[in-house]
Amino acid sequence: MEKVAGVSLECGCLIVLHTVGRKSDFKPHLHIMLMSGGISPEGQWISLKKFDFSILNRTWKETLLAGMRNWDELGEFESVFSETE
Image 1 (tube, rainbow, N blue to C red):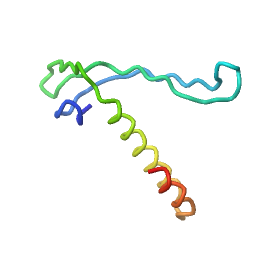
Image 2: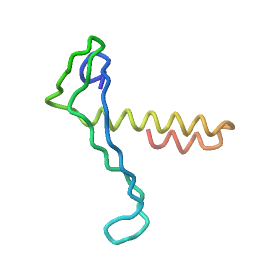
Image 3: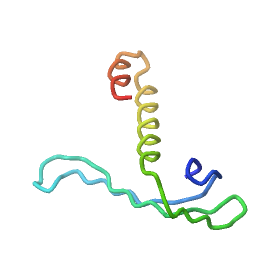
């Protein structure tokens, strides 16, 4: 949210993990409902009318890869992580 609003915001979201797809096959995926704004450090609501979801996608990818690299202490899978960037 900070990248979009230009200021740090307290915001919230609801995340639901589904483990199956429409055909009842194993297809884990997330459904995410994100607030359309947040509360500034001054306690004021900042509404974000337009949101570039590519920012959310990039941030999620960076966070996930950082966690995976942290898990891969020996660096055995670095080539796999680099291919997805």
